[in-house]
Image (cartoon, one colour):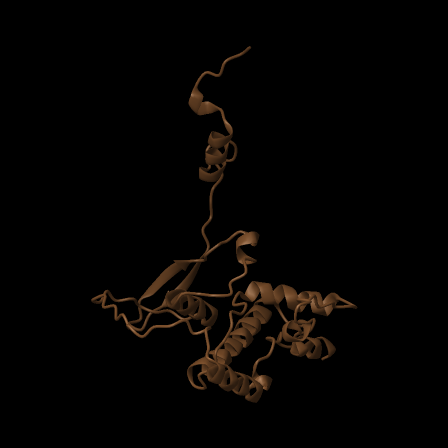
Length: 211
């Protein structure tokens, strides 16, 4: 039996570390970092790195976000730069906090009336029009702008009309997959919860498929 020269040169963990940090095969390859050149309000030019994520990370379902994560995600969709300033961290704790999803009978009836009144605004995000002359960059910009408008519409319902929103998909990549599946499919099947199928059935999705 041949023994290894060093414990640090073999093993699955060591192989994974070598692959991650570039040691071993291909370590001498030149790594190129692609950045985006931006100009701030003072006229100074700087370069920001393009965030690169694995495919499985991009396809992660995101149904709920913390306020900071939601702000950063919206800023990224809009391509907006911002400056963060360190301020005094003041946290206000309300003693009358309650679970917004636990409603009384009167609150539930009021919420249902609001949902019925705004039913046409609770829609599936649409993919913007495109054809064979549309470049990938143009389509990406249109999809981001359309998705951002859809998110803003839901935020207005929640903030201005005090409409209680259940968790919904906030990841654009997931919606892109749905758009492509609908465009390429001859038959689309909805799988709903048999305990209350009409509640989980999306009528607007059926309308979108027929458009």
